[in-house]
Amino acid sequence: MKAAVGGYARARDLRHALELLSEAGGVGRVLAGGQSLVAALNMRLSTGDVLIDISTLAECRGVVDDGDTLHIGALTRHVEIGRDPLIREHAPLLADAVGLIAHAAIRNRGTIGGALANADPSAEFPACALALDAVMHVEGLAGSREVPAEDFFRDTFETALEEGEILTSISVPKAASGEAQVIEEVARRSGDYALAGLCLVRREGRHRVALFSTGPKPMLSRGAMAALDRGDLEAAVNALRGEIDPPSDTQASASYRRHLSGVLLRRTMAKIEGESR
Amino acid sequence: MSEIIRDQIDIALMVNGEPVEARVPAGQHLIDFLRLELGLTGAHASCEHGVCGACTIRVNGDAVRGCLMLAAQAEGAEVWTVEGLTDSGEIADLQEAFVARNALQCGFCTPGMLVAAQELLSRGGAPSREEIREHLSGNYCRCTGYEAIIDAVETVAGDRAGKGTA
Image (cartoon, rainbow over all chains, first blue to last red; front, side, top):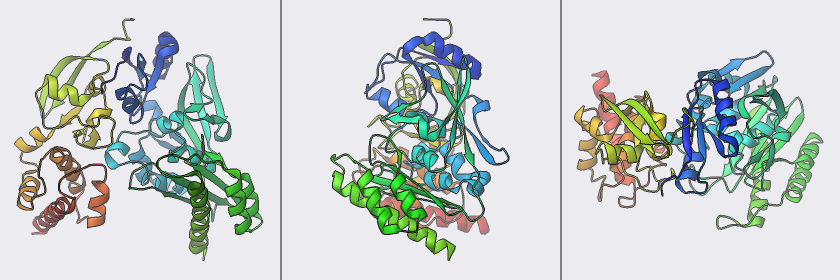
């Protein structure tokens, strides 16, 4: 089908983008890489949107070493995340996630900020942000604020972004010495959305477990994290399976997703144990 | 509508090496613009939500989904379609290999396949069959069963690597 949009404007800089978004009122939609938004527009899941195109704003693109953290511009493309040496060294989870996201042609245009702001519960980057304890940097005409990943994802396609605000960058703590970061998912075909996926981070003996495609939003499994901290994998698998309430759909039943989540936790732990041996 | 927010947008870009200026509807995707306004019907508008890969074209050096990019976003871009890549001779060996190996039947997916495959081949080296499969995993073919396409790309990779060292 063809999109039915209410208008388009190309922002010159971030300030201009915020002014345009304000001018557009309630129907303004921020267009970044467009790999989810333009598909949704073409399918007329949304009509009449006024598109504020921020895709050319150089100030929101690229990766900077910020001391203890990496500062990643929202418009940094998946393909750039995948090959960036700073990301590979300090946040390898993000680099590894890129290979699981869609296909090469989509990774060439899709942006990390777009994926986070879109908050698809099946997407990899939101779960990575949770697992890495990332901080979202948000700008509005009234000023800027920071939102921890744990407070950012509210529901399916719903975030803490208020009307008129734009996600401009994220900060990710640099991996500590000996830190392990692993992402695993099960999908029917390469590039498909996962039936279930899991990110595991082990930092100085403490674990963080984030799941995607297992509920209305990416989530941390606190029960599994506590059990892994105690060194009890069986208890972690049980806690994980109890904590999630996955949906049933044409791709997979809830019980299969619950089963897969436990399998993925065992796989990621095996990978970490294998690496540290 | 304000001076800046418009439903018709003026764009200037390069298509297949030639400058193009046009006024496009805000919601028109790049493939419809290329096909309907410029008559470049090689890239196909098929699923129009980024799944099938039949619309794959090259924008600023990258293979992208033409249906997931608005024409309005192509301001200043350098766009290449299968027509331009054919005229320049850049993919002549790949096209010959597709024919020789019977890597197309109806041909609907072929322009997208060629652009996607050329992106992989242009990196040089000799990609494995697994890497070729992965790189083309976003391009659907409903005729060939893919095997012949992988064969053709693998053959060209080998031939080009051979020429590079000769």
